[in-house]
Length: 257
Image 1 (tube, rainbow, N blue to C red):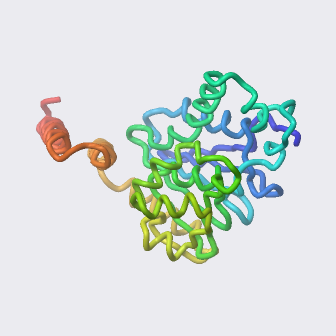
Image 2: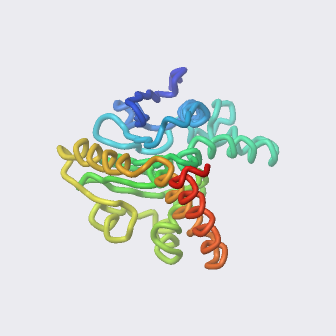
């Protein structure tokens, strides 16, 4: 594998929309540590003007997961799983923490993220799609988390978001069986917001982005924060968060802030 300095990640900005594209179609957008470094850098460079982030992959797959060379048993392969396993425990965990940062920023405050998923989203590819707030699937899309069958675990923020979306028991089944979740099931279970023919993916994503940009910026960001916190807050804490957010909005509308 010959690494590219940009990790096969390119970005394009149009107004308040940032599009992040995995650009490695010949390898089904397989990911490497360089990919994660590039994604993390994109997150670290976000500015307040970005309201929507669209994540997509070129070619016939969103992302087929890890580059095959990373599975080498040779600990001398830079960035490989064998090398990672040979590190001291704290060093290995710290490295994985850095990889996770490439995914977790997609839930940054004030930013709505949308994954445009075609073809396969496997392993790291599935977790990149899961890291986003919303997902649009093509009708042929399939999401899989095969890590347990390989003697590994999903470690790129995928477990928390999967449970949020489909619940505990279905998340257990998806992770331990490693089976493919097709587009129709993904919509039914909440993994995907909608599924469309491949030719309509770009249009569907554009329509969704336009709708997300419709509300007042500050109101949208306050609402997004509330919905995200509701996943983990108890009722009393969430009620208090709603009250505080509404008072901030009313004061802003009244010109007092």
